Length: 256
Image (tube, rainbow, N blue to C red):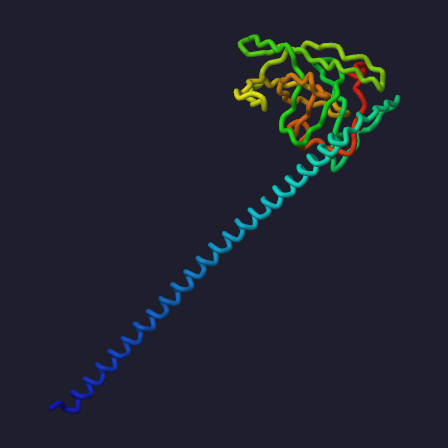
């Protein structure tokens, strides 16, 4: 039989065991709460990052849709003018300087303009095409040759269609030599094989703009315009108003 002192010792041991068990359970509960809090913070950060990525992608898509809408408007206006077979706008020249219009610190270009080509020492009609990336130049009799270890081309630039309304004579043929900057391959609708064409860099004047731009050489003899200006020429420096034509006058040789 247990004595009174033995019972007291046994009772104290049981109480100590219960206290220890309670502390362990309390610590486990705290650890579980901390783990849940950590997981929630991690999930919140991940969701926040995903939301930022989605917002950025939505903004990019909205800009792409806006750009596509502008392009479709330009194409629609161009097709409408072609279907209507509108006559070439009459060019009127005045003996005074005409300042280059500005829009947000950028020059304004019409759908068609006169451009001065330094290498040809003459003005040519140009179509400003917002749907084209690169510019193109009417070139015939293209001859490839080597100079100082680099590939050059010699070609003839001409536009023989006279302007009857202004009683202008046909432009003279200009022979131009320029180094080849690169080559491009283009597939014609009537041909299965790719056509290799040279790209040269020439300096041109349009109003107050005097810039270098790259031209793909192609036979545009059947085209109305011997020069086509793509976006690479006027991006960041000009905007195009397709409702206007020949905003800027011809460049005179004595101005050089």
